[in-house]
Image (cartoon, rainbow, N blue to C red; front, side):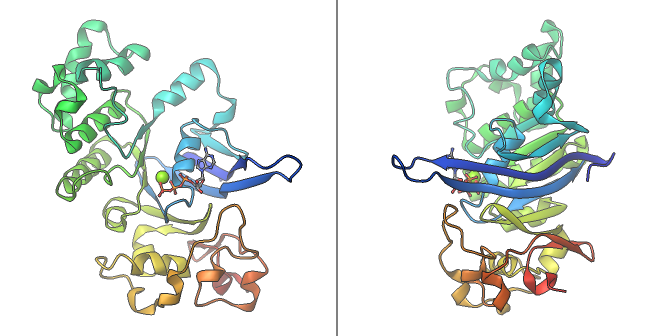
Length: 326
Ligand SMILES: Nc1ncnc2c1ncn2[C@@H]1O[C@H](COP(=O)(O)OP(=O)(O)OP(=O)(O)O)[C@@H](O)[C@H]1O
Ligand SMILES: [Mg+2]
């Protein structure tokens, strides 16, 4: 549902990648994102978690309009983004920024920091020319980088500093939403906490909403307000962060929490059985019924026949026959 307070509504979004098949053989599709819906409110952090290959980055690329959806809609500030053209599209590109996992790959190695950060000001005509350098310096200060950095190149910085610079660059255009795809996972553990604190400060001070994609549940627990748990292209559970960690419902959420033992108050750790650590099915040949049933120790007779849909119950959203049968 798209309401006033929703900054972003994602409605049954799908992305199927067509796979190369032999001449005459039927077309095959990889269902990377298969009917995902969620809303993000302004000034909130919405986390997307799930194992490798479940479709998180594909969602990020769809949200950035780097990919076109196979089906479904993305509504940003009340407008269907697929219909945006010209000025409105420029406005959207300004409002939604991305921070990638690898801060080195996302900075041009031949551009000095001052130039890399001035560029968005120029492209979007956000400040008069003579003010740009001051604005860049100010933003770098905000992320903890001194103005000595201005005339240096990306390789002269550590990974953590480069990620700070990427975050500063995302902030240049005063976005309403930042999509951060594994923003910490390329960094040393000792640096991760610093960048995490920086993201926390941005959340508190700027009111910018954040979509946080991470496989690190500690990060998600610390920073996010809501969590969507994905499995093979679908959201299997979506809830407030505290609910997910205090009382995970979906057997897959239990499994994820159990493999992150440092999160203490999750009830899941002793409920999970090793059988659930089985192989993830291929997103090309998904099993019939619930995709998780081959790994699920709580499997019911219905689970390999009918696919459960995401339903709301007591403020929680869950796609599991254990909860949705009545
Ligand atoms: N351009 C593409 N063509 C074909 N398949 C793709 C393409 N991009 C992604 N995929 C496939 O789509 C699925 C989802 O990939 P995606 O990168 O979104 O996963 P992810 O959740 O971000 O994983 P990770 O945690 O490893 O980053 C994977 O099976 C991947 O191989
Ligand atoms: Mg990814």
